[in-house]
Length: 133
Image (cartoon, rainbow, N blue to C red; front, side, top):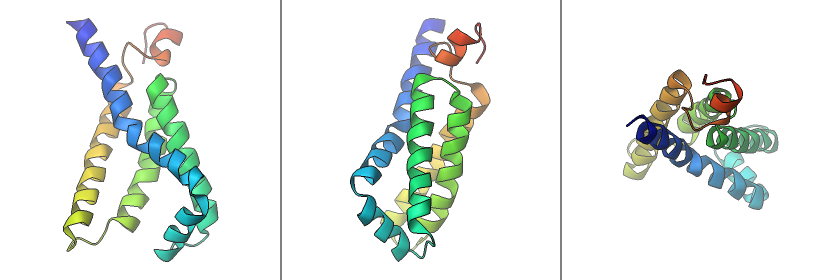
């Protein structure tokens, strides 16, 4: 049974961050358009914050998928997700925005679980630290 739990944690880690991995790659592919979108929402220094967002999304996702410094990756994604949610998904009268806001809050919950429980047995953290993590 423990093997199934460990496998579920691995799959859960991957599924939890696929959105961020895809989003970070998409931001690279449409850098100018994303910066313009951010500036249109009143974000100052859009290019600077966009580079930061790409870094946080990609590094956070990759560390969580690999389970290597996964808790650090969870912190990166938490730091990214909180202002993103408050700035870009705050029009609560729009049902679609409410869905996006609620989705982000749910992801925050998953990241908090990962932060507290660790990446599980099938992770580089676990393997390299002698069973810890």
